[in-house]
Image 1 (spheres, rainbow, N blue to C red):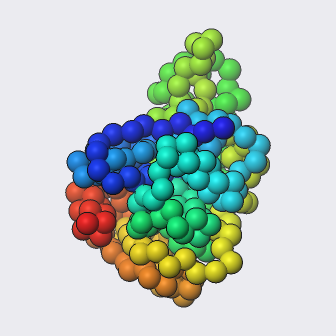
Image 2 (cartoon, rainbow, N blue to C red):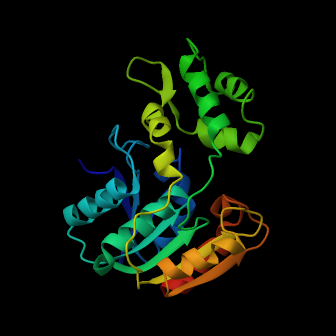
Length: 254
């Protein structure tokens, strides 16, 4: 099965991938800027957005999903950009199919194992799913607030709450599939040898997803990598500082 995607722009090919619980819509601010210079394929990863649902979800599967998509699109080589979980998918794809990657950009994630940090989010999302007759997003927000304190995080998640064909509100992402595979999502990528493609890691200065102790893992996995720090931004750096993030990506790719 092929991933859902949105194609915009003209020029060299570029694959763009969102993070956990997101969709291609979350990266529209990047896609719009990059589409002035590239043919951008903004994708919904498996179990997200309008892409297929699956009980299997790990980075090997997701890297192969991207390969299937570029084969379908007759793309021999592309720039690859990913945020958070999408950054790990991008790293996995580059590690498996280095010959298909021009340059790699990873937004605020490292090739390491992370401790669980989404337990309360999953609990809140499940609570919404279990609630009969959720009236609207405001109602769902009230339910989520018992588990998720930050309004910005709740608003991000609520973008994936949509009406089904029967008129009920439900999550677009496959919540059971994600929850069952959460250990695979926080795991490291599966790479047996260094990837030698030119790589840029972009970190939000206020984020704890890339830390000094991750440097060795980054350099070992991606020896030809450099780093850029976006000041005044956290993990959702593209939403907080879009101009700075887009300029960093464009400067590197061009």
